[in-house]
Length: 421
Image (spheres, rainbow, N blue to C red):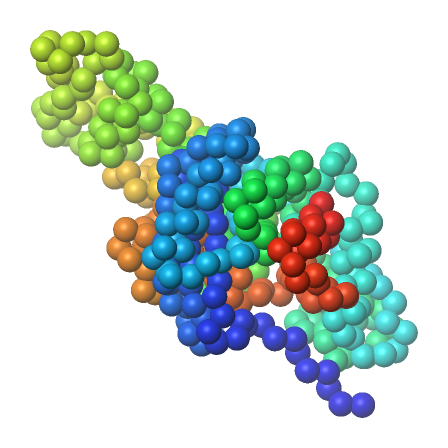
């Protein structure tokens, strides 16, 4: 009996892929064409101020659907293509990450995809508290007849197949709500990828993934954490604080509007004060003041004194999550920061101080050819979703379905909801 061919890991050349990042501050849609095995050509980008999303959760379905549709429409116009399905992110705020080991009998025959699907089916039957659904089941190791350390079991022989998994279980209600919003925007959810997993795929170099690394994606409503070891994502987590909380602190501390606070934070904000900050004055328009009164002048150091405590709190919470996860040591000494809120001056240095690790700032280099306005850290998740869709990583959730999927749009939506909810 010959060796079983490995399943395809890449999309065919010329395929059109789409990704939608539904965030708390923006909704982004990327469309790309597959050029070859490891290259995507971005052809359409649309982004829109987020509506109906707070701290990674959809709080107004109608507003979120409208914003998704607008971002998708802008990307389609640029691409000159109509998309019918997209890879969608799910905030780590909705998920729980836990290790899981399953074992299935293979009775002496060759291991194939069917055995891996049976392993996933048995993983799904493991009792989980509350109303949750596994959205990722990432193999972190295999064993045949108790012999561990096997990297690729397909084609091997034995009596039992063991799979060690990183299972990411999501709140089923949040997944269903996201699916309905995307369906109402006339799209099929091709699949779901958790935010920090996607961001890591777009920003980490191979050595970081292999040797151990913590990815911290600093978004508007949340700060999301992904731990990567030996080339796979082994843990995800989230703290409910992001750039929008810093903006609110600035607005409150300076008695100015949220719009002015965001602008002041972007132009003058920093995580550390410098000696010159005491002398430099910034103009702060006051809420409710008539224009004729003119702005209020405050030292830049006062702005830093508002921003720094919130960022310190954020990194302390991240450190606490890492220590509680048990992956603090396994993740090594490397941290990669990305996300829109990572761009403030001094954030890298502050993270280095509090986390006691080497820190670098990252943008989504894995998708070359992105326009300058979409190649920044704020778009790491959207770029990673494309990479996830293109490469079909070795996630048991991405194994081929046992039966033929329906072809009509509404049939596919219903099929996806039945399979995933």
